[in-house]
Image (cartoon, rainbow, N blue to C red; front, top):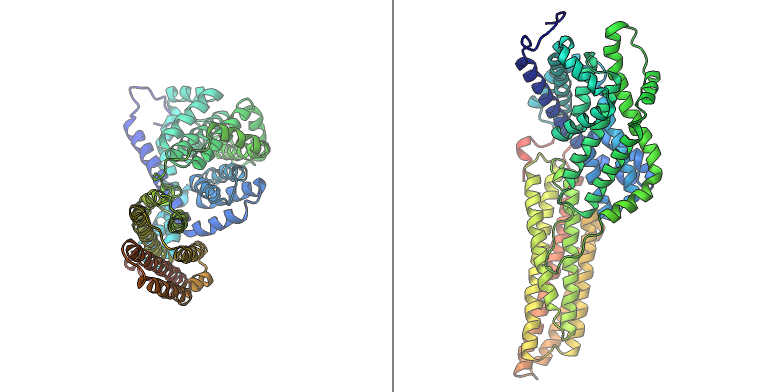
Length: 579
């Protein structure tokens, strides 16, 4: 149909539309695969980069840009940042820099697809697909998955380009494209389409395809790209729905930053055109072909320029931005005792097991904090005449809730492809959650119900017994703190120290038992029944410490397995990598 005027009644929309949608589908699917593959290859390393490079907002910008450019997912970067805030490793002001840097990192996609690399699409698909199917070594398979994903992205671009080529001679479409040159219209269209497909990269890809066919002016392409920056805020906000206060604040920072950035440039598009025109070198082809090569490059450069400039301009307003966000989204009021929800388990990270397991570790720490608080309450129950057992019951209910949530999350992680060390971590965390939940049940049953029995009997533990038993429980609590720290930091030294607590604790327990036996002969009636409760409490403290020692053994087994993870020669087959 090229070279002749196309009319509404002679233009067949069906084939180009199907081709366009197929190309868009392949592009989005390839982008998902690319993100998945890059997260597998670099997830753990990127986490370390963020941990080490976020001491101030300026380093945070670099960290956010670098991490997002590597893993091609600003949402994963933001989720990691939220986790660091929740864990106290970052404050929100520092996190603002990372979020701004993530916007810069996303521009790498536009830069890649603006070059004429689509000719390599089929070669990438062939090499990547065959390598992924026939190789067993995980690290090689992941590399070929990335190659296959790139091929799908490029081939999707090729299909979209082929689908839109006939439109160059279709007057109604050319007239419609002229309206996109209006900044407001272009921004609204770009925002709406990005919100619909949930991918600013997809919007940028279509913009570059249209520009490469000569269907879109540079001004129109820039307006659509600005709109994509607004539309991607919808994705960020939806991802934060139902999440923690920190997640919602991070999403709101993202919204404020992107919208403010668009407002800065909406009246400066002509100046931006001048800047990117100066930046972009000629291809030497000339004529229409020159424009089809140059304009996509200029749009990609404009996308990079306004994100970089926005960051440089707005980074100085990080403090005021945080104050505004805190006022809009205040701290959540404490819920009633006994009610709790998972704080760290984020669905966004499920497809990146190494990062998702870090979040499970943080949630296990919350379980451990509650068990430790229960031990302190139990010590108080032994010493006092109050009804602290009510606190034990509510904390045990919270433990049950977290236990179920952690197990469900670990089950979903287990369905993914896991490395040997990740499999071991899953097993460790399942065991740790079970032990902590059992400890909560022990404390609630033994010291919650026991305290009710003591009140009903109108008698208390003897002063000497109460003092010694309370000290024993607090000692057990200290062992729990140590093993939780060992679990969080994979600290073999502390885990071994906990494992060696048995002999010392055994001496103390035997001493208390002897003391109780000495009292038994001179006791009768209600006092004899209280001695039975005292003896049960001693046994409960022993069982608690035994479970803590089992938790330490889990830490040692896990770290030992990680140290001995198979090399490339003896890496297990795919069928062996399941929990």
